[in-house]
Amino acid sequence: MAEREITYREAILTALQEEMRRDPKTLIMGEDIAESGGPFKTTLGLVDEFGPARVRDTPIAETGFVGAALGLALTGWRPIVEIMFADFLGVCFDQIVNGIAKHRLMSGGRVKVPVTIRAIGGAGLRFAAQHSQTAESWMLSVPGLKIVCPSSPAEAYSMLKGAIRDDNPVLVLEHKALLSSKGPVPVGSDDAAMPTGPRILRPGKHVTIVATLAMVGRALEAADLLAADGIEAEVMDLRVLRPFDASAVAESVRKTNRLVLVEEQVAAGGWSASVVADVVTEAFDYLDAPPIRVTLPDYPLPYSPPLEDEAIPSPTRIADAARKLMRDTGRG
Image (tube, rainbow, N blue to C red; front, side, top):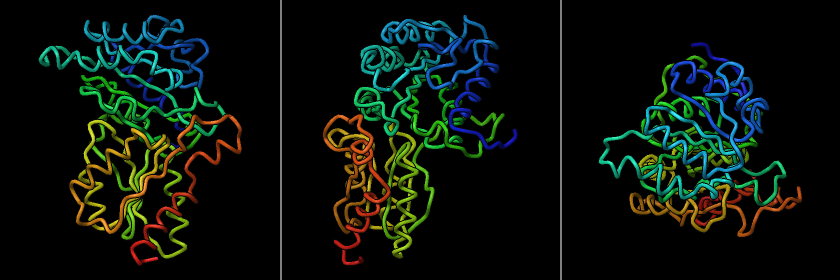
């Protein structure tokens, strides 16, 4: 194992290479992933090493190749499916929800369903309303499906390796605005355990800020802004949407007494609502004020750069939400 400074994109590609070398029953399917190296170049060179039988270009038919992944998994393969844009998860929704997620449970656990679904989403790069959704909460209510959200190159690497080795279906939500971000990654690591809950990235005592994917970096920037005002924010990367364990967030709230949640989705039906419900159940008496959710506005993301920038939660908006909590509780 050697720690290397690589991009989020390279971390994904490295994880795929290592797992495909480790297990010859691992293959990947998706649109334009072979000779072209994928729409975001996360599969670059895989077809040269592993051949077209294990790196399979598919038609534009998510329902077909996602359904084929279930059949492959049931017959001893360990398929990885790349969804070009997370927005297209809606096309194969039934295959995931009523097939892949339920099959192991409906068999009483007698069959394994080791399907990894990679979906690349997120805003900030001017892909407009139909190609900019993170899709984080679309599958939140589906039993039998694990959902992880890597926010850094190291998380992208370890989560993908863990997902591929898992005998249950895992949805890995990647963010296209993070693809060029860099960070240290333990390349060659054989530690592929799936994360089990949130991680504290910055300790603090005045307010807890919880975020996912690209919003994690913005939450950390907001913490820097707050520090200039003497406010110490505890920043948590949620990491795992399903199965969700609220205990770590509740424990943080017991210390800070305030909660801000940052979500690159509209508020209606978002994961932040579930987190608030669980924290209120576990730590209601410790909250000095109602939690604040910083989300997208309730309309499709615009293509216009100024409008898109205004819609996405910014470090300033996040910091302002934390300052409001401090003022409302007589501490600002």
